[in-house]
Image (cartoon, rainbow, N blue to C red; front, side, top):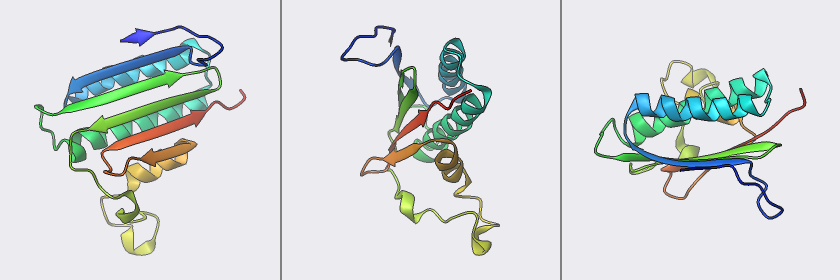
Length: 147
């Protein structure tokens, strides 16, 4: 479902809700559509790069870690775009996790660990990264910077 209505009560110029079976090709299609909307609205390369990195990481986390590559489970993506910001929510059907328990990959004792880098990227590139109580849904917001 995709809409493009904007009103005084609704600042969104585009919104999309998509639910799909655990599949990286479908996740890429959803990401490509979001990036195309950002480009259509003249978002700068720096902002688009950050959104690309963060959303791709969140989608892959939902598919690999959340849904454990189980294509009987679904991933839901809700995207909204305003002239000044973009919000995306990604939810998987996994058991969730506690984000505060993920080791900081920049600390010396964690440099060799394979986990934590994706979450760090998401937090670095987005203005807001919030998880639901269960830890199976992330809401990220990117504020558009001046070009």
